[in-house]
Length: 480
Ligand code: XIL
Image 1: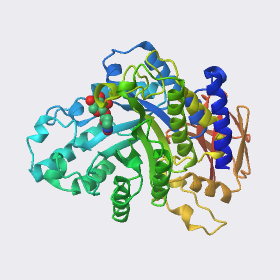
Image 2: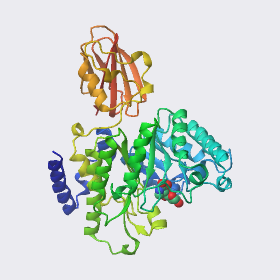
Image 3: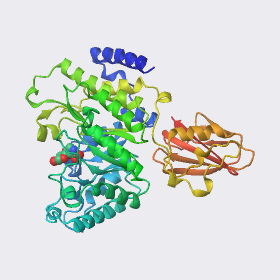
């Protein structure tokens, strides 16, 4: 099925690109709408220029129309949030949270423990283990506490593996490792979880897309994740930054293999900082074939993302080539979906084509409700079938678990237009609750007549839970 999809997609993609038909997509069809139907999150950063109100109006317009997950380029990093010891600055981060809430966009928090963009006052405590432990804990307590419930996922630790092809921690140039040792990572996860038990917690790094060879970063990370899981360290996801170049043709397959290895450990893999740059020297001489090749690579990453059930977020490190760290710092250029005039590039079309050739019914999602949004008295108690797996409320919910619940209950629902019909409820009234895909309650109502009216509910993907007596039933619905 996958190869059929890929072939089909490739043909459409090639046809569209040859015809230059960016407008082949319906006006109301966006990356965001297609991502939401598939229960996935696709996004880009808000550049620092956005935070400083120094960016073209097109930027925000495109951003909120096309994307449903957001990250701050620099504004939630340690040096931005705690520039002086125990003096926190949340102004810019709050601005992003307000924007995300107003536009129903998921927020990634980036990043808590990282060797880079650490303020000078932290480096002054170099080598002082007890002090650094206190500093890191205080930072996590304050920052995670401030945005508790608003940040869906944190990069708890960023870039802690070295670059030396010997699969070890970054032991030099990291104030955290040099002062504390590798236990800074474990501690950071535990402290973050203690403050916000609902947040997804990621380990994030670059060069993970180079594959699972001996001594590679990816293999090392898989080994560490095994250890963390065994020791009860509350990690739920890995982020592969994936800053690559146009020549890196094998990397999508490497990401697929990495996703599969992490799936074995019940860990989500997110693409967190994708860009596919050309060498800076090629600026000005790039032609249609170059942009088509870039589009093809974006397409391959999106195919992997949609086909691997434990992938949740696909984040690109920038929206327009007019504002990109590639030109400023990386000796690369033109790595994003929109050109400098905010015109979508072939890479944009490729992503749309990939989404459209993976029907929503075939794309799985690692996201369901957060368990804490379900009051404890409504834990599903199935009395007809002996299946202990559904009663494990400590395990991470998965879409499989939801499917299991639905299979075991007699209740059912179906959506016809904007009316949700509920059948199989002998005890009346039943309670119907609607949650968004981040597990936040949207509304709750009593159902007296076997149906409820959803005409005032915004379009999107939701999870519905019906409770009647001691029985409960959940299902994902798409309101159009
Ligand atoms: C980059 C920003 O884009 C730049 O503006 C900043 O000067 C340096 O950091 N990996 C990461 C990101 O985790 O935080 C980095 O962002 C890019 C590499």
